[in-house]
Image 1 (cartoon, rainbow, N blue to C red):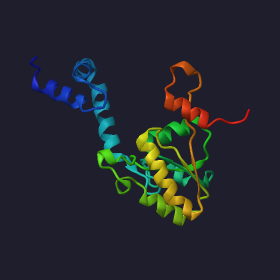
Image 2: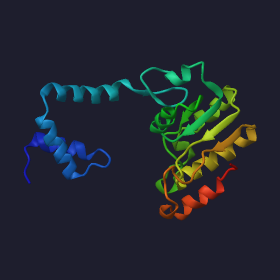
Image 3: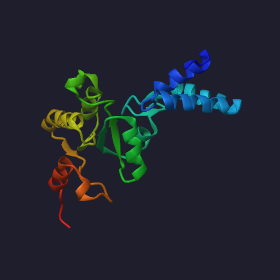
Image 4: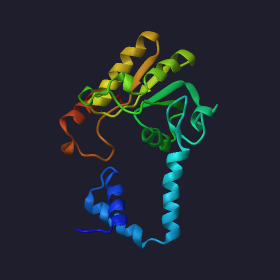
Amino acid sequence: MYYPEPISKLIDSFTKLPGIGPKTAARLAFFVLEMQEDDVLDFAKALVSAKRELTHCVVCGHITDQDPCAICQDNQRDPSVICVVQDPKDVIAIEKMKEFSGKYHVLHGAISPMDGIGPEDINISSLISRLKDEEVEELIVATNPNIEGEATAMYISRLVKPAGVRVSRIAHGLPVGGDLEYADEVTLSKALEGRRDI
C-alpha cells in the first residue's frame, strides 16, 4: 500500500522499536497524525531530551542525568553490598521494591558466546576496579535466569571469590500466585533447589 513519504518514514521509525511490527507501526503513525501539534512536539522533545541528556553513571553504569548517579551519591546506602544487574531497567525494578539499600553495578548485557559476547564486551572490568577501590563485602548477582544470565553469574563468581568477596545469587522459582501445574521443569527444579525452612 502506498503511503506519502512522511508517514512512510514515521512507520519505518516505529518498526525499529522492539515488539513493534508493521501493522502496529502504521497504527501508531496514524495516531500521531491525529494528535495535537503541541503534544507531538512535546513527544519529539522528550525523545531528543532522553537521548541527549542521559548518560551512564561513571561509577555503576546506571542511566542518569547527573554523574555520578543519585544512588551512587546517596550516603545512606550500604556501600558494602553491590547488586549486579544486566541493564538499567533491572535497577529500576529492584528500586520499586524499596527493600534493597545497597548499591548497584550495571553490566549492560550478559555473556553469550553464541552471539559473540564475551566478558570483555560487558561492564565487568569496572566492577573489578570497584572491588579494589571500595570496601565491598558481598556481590548479589541478579542477572536473568536464562543461559546467558547463569553463565555471567558463574563467571563473576569465579572471578571474584578468590578476592574474599561473598557472591550470592538471587533466588529463582515459582512466582507468587503461580500454579505448579503450569510451571516448566527448570522453574520447578530451581524452586526446589532454593527451598527454605518455614
